[in-house]
Length: 193
Image (cartoon, rainbow, N blue to C red):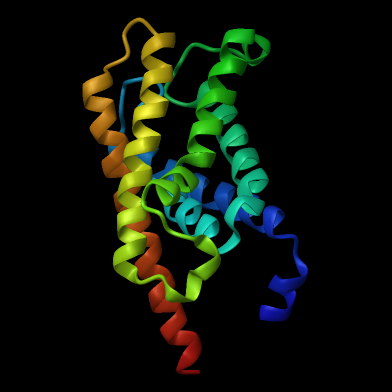
């Protein structure tokens, strides 16, 4: 299995995992959270954990896979989620394209920015402790929330920036923690077999 994973392009792997985790969190969002607000943040955003781990492991090289994952999920959210009223042809609206691209850029680079602020070198991944990963997760979720909410606030008249700012952070952190613990559990199962 590890041999197969090593042969796959890391950006394709990250993109694929991003979409899988995004679809899992959408099921949670649609069934449990049941928000009536268009484009509302999820209380469980699993891709943030992938975003943090992939950036720590792959550094800048992994950004194309993350960016593509964000763009595709952004298109999905703007077209199909929560009754935004946007139709298929509206995706070609320049304003919607710019919103998707800007939020995707911010979301793709938030972990690198957090690493830069915390002065952490992702090339020394083996020396990074869980505490550091959690600090990076927290700071990058704040950066992502600030950036995305600023874009939405400037783009939509009725954007609830206060509520959404904290909801983004909560969703990123709960998603990251769940993903970290699932991976820790899987690692233990693989080691003990």
